[in-house]
Amino acid sequence: MKITSIVPGFGGTFYCGNCLRDSAFSSALRKAGHKATLLPIYLPLSLNRQRQETPVPIFYGAVNLYLKQQFPVMRNMPHWVEKLLDSRPLLNLAAKKSGSTRADGLEAMTESMLLGPDGLQHKELETLVNFLKNNEKPDLVHLSNALLLGMAGRIKETGIPVVCSLQDENIWIDAMEPAGQEKMWRLMAEKAQAVDSFVAVSHYFGQLMQEKMEIPSHKLHTVPIGIDPGSCLYHPPAMAPRTIGYLSRFCKENGFDIVIGAFILLKKESQFSDLRLAITGGMTGDDRSYFHSQMARLKNNHLMKDLTVFHDFGAGSLDPFFQELTLLSVPVLKGEAFGLYQIEALASGIPTVQPALGAFPEIAEATGGGVIYHPNTPEALAEKLSEILSKPDALVQLSINGRRAVEEKFDSEKLTMNLIKIYKSLIFNN
Image 1 (cartoon, helix red, strand yellow):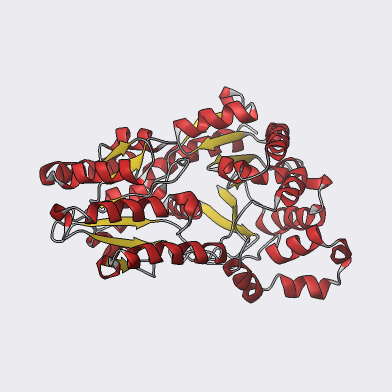
Image 2 (tube, rainbow, N blue to C red):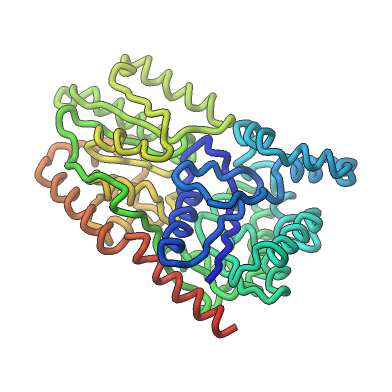
């Protein structure tokens, strides 16, 4: 089979679990003997963990899209100007600037993208469809998320089956005004009718999206996020010194300040005088002021000496980070559809401590490698961390459980077999 995955790029300035998930599945498809291509839109992928043999162009360039959406006069710019704005250096620069990866202020563009042929990006859509028909010629197209559903109908018209992943779309929509949210969900439900199958990354998120988008049960499947266990070196949790880890974008939405607050609380207790904090995940331009405010909190509490920042979270760089850790916590404010960092930590022998939100309880139960807490506050997190850090034997057992669960249940090659079954049912019965 030849599978083309259409994936929003993120420029590589922060840890993007959904992007890494798409990359892992594409890699596993190739290992299984199929042809798989990642087709980036908006921004370059910058996935240092995987390089495609044949480079492909970037469609729906973020700079072009933004200018055309905001300034009508730009909608008729010369082709050479469009080409310049779509150049990789300029798109890489855009990825580092404020606003390139957030929904706030981009409601109109989101709606326009979902409108597909009837939106302002109809020209870009036709360019993409022509590339699929004349260059890629895939057996199936897999959309990375439901915010891309405006493409589905047009792609289906060419006779190509369409699959769409469901992963954290609600985070983007929930950042909008209430009236905008309602409009987007209605539009997504309408465009969902053109999709042959949906693949949710967790049972929790599949049920949520089924209700919001009115997805028929026969079209909905669940295939969790997986990784290659062999790419992660297993080691028991570090106990001298004990270290809390955070792996995600440094932003408020991901609860970075909750980790900082919990760490400050624990360091006030004498039994945690050895405790350290290790963080990695990067940021966008939007996050810099917020990040510095959190560093100021540590500085004011004389804790900067107990902090380690790992600036490289690309290919082969996470093992040194995990080697430092006793456990990992990423207290996302509203939970997540999955959270790839959990599986990467568990495969490395690091237990997780997550809020009882989103799919986190589902993953903790399925792996036996993590614990949950409630409510999602610095105080509740500090209490749970104190409990777990004080039980070395329990930490070791969580570590063993987590690694075993990844090997048995979250191996990307095994999970990809489930995805392949879905693909074949559509390709050969189409």
